[in-house]
Image 1 (cartoon, rainbow over the protein chains, first blue to last red):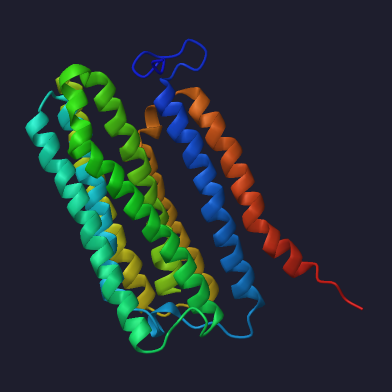
Image 2: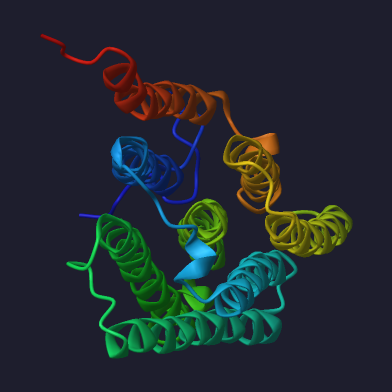
Length: 196
Length: 98
């Protein structure tokens, strides 16, 4: 059975099913990260002392990662805009850059984590590191998930462009919404964990 | 498929938003170097992060021109999100005392 309203708008919602689906999913994601941010606040205001992030964490690397992730959001939206212009070649270029930026982000994160582990700064060391690894670890898993979907749409999933270009464009838009959400979460994680 | 001129206009907006986000990232790091008192530092950092987040949500996620249903879903989510954020503060300012 074919999934209905993948391109046409549903008369009752005014949206295609993919769009409403991804927004409902993102709403649940807001609550997932919201609960962890609330945990962070509770741990911080309940602590006798709390270290400034920049005394433990690597701010230059995190700044580079912020730039990498914001840049990937632009390449993601440019990939979608290229499909809107019927330019599949440009789509592939921008989509590949987005996936590459995801790899770049994770590679930098790997070096950050390795340095922490090397110096014995494990989640069990203190509450700050416990919430740092929980929040950035969960965020990293989201980056991996986004890369998997974006990689699929760049590779085997792109066959849909030949048969149903509007449906494919909607898929890219929806995966882009997830990717921008991942960027948005990092925009808050960066100052909260590294700079305050 | 969308109108090409409309997309060209959107692309110019994306590039403008990108440059603004980069500038605000530098501002975020620069402000942290000032070593402001904790409350002021938290307030400034969250204001800048909120501006950046609003730009991403409005333009990259197209919320500036989205359907009403999405706004309702998000309004409900944000109200729950704010409630969750304030729960720890509520418990902090209303401790159990003997």
